[in-house]
Image (cartoon, rainbow, N blue to C red; front, side, top):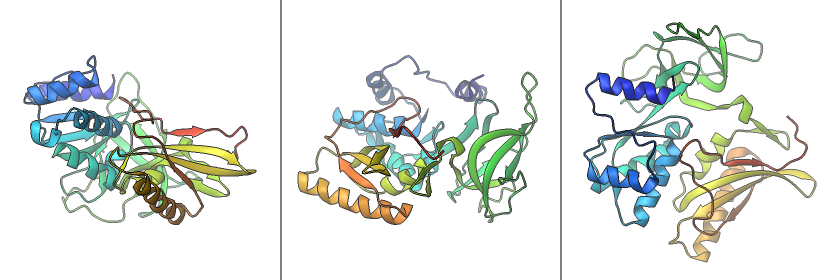
Length: 296
């Protein structure tokens, strides 16, 4: 069963009225948020930002004109990236939470009210392991691949299922007092998403961590290409409509410096016309690999 459906059913079990919006357009969803006393919103982080952007175009301030108290997000690592989480919380005037999960395992983790940057694992639902490249357990503070064994699924039990998610085993306790296994920063990336550019390993999440803190970026796209015989990263940004050409150029220069320092390689940054980059109502597909031959 899809994990979003599971969460809806559990919401009903708690006595919460569930407002299904899967068949609605973005405009209808905004109208529903404004019209009805909806207090919680669940969607991908990208779609939450898109909802806010579209509402603003209609002169609607979701933080002031809705009753949203909290938002929870899945499908992407955005809600565990501080800058992305901050943008969502500012747009909705609500607390934002990362709900981590896999279709094969269901919801397996969450962040808590302590806001410590740690994701707790539901160890009563699944047994977690974090393994290195030699399939050995990593030590606290080290990164590895997240591996799960399901503890309650009867129709499709999984034994040591390799998720392909890269995580860091926490080396600190959460102030909330929970003793569940914790992951620092949630899901840091996917092994499938790992790219090698001029000898440097790059994850799309790291680029988002460096781009999102900058005001004036409504959306962005990552293009991997061959440029003058070398692998190159092109980051296209969709600037806020209110920025003039000079401000857009200054924003690109700031991002160029931030990405160069944060990634350890030089990156090309260019601004598109406002609103020209695609938006998504499900998982975002921000990465385009235009190289015909790649290292791996």
